[in-house]
Image: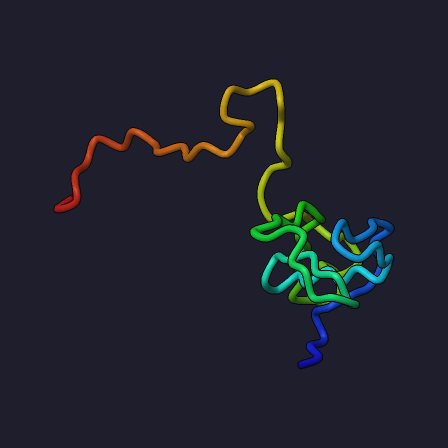
Length: 91
């Protein structure tokens, strides 16, 4: 079953058969040996850039979706900020 999300660019070797044909499936988050089928890693997170572009100007500027991770903040900058408006759900 060949999917377009698979790319073979890893330099790892399979611990089971020693093959260097490693397939990284970005859709499922798995690193798989292309020879014996061993799943070497699962639930991998893609830490690459997330570009948001709906027009030609946005494609050229390549603005990020959200703030980058920061190790200087306790939650790495992933917290949610909720403003104090002084209103509840009913207005």
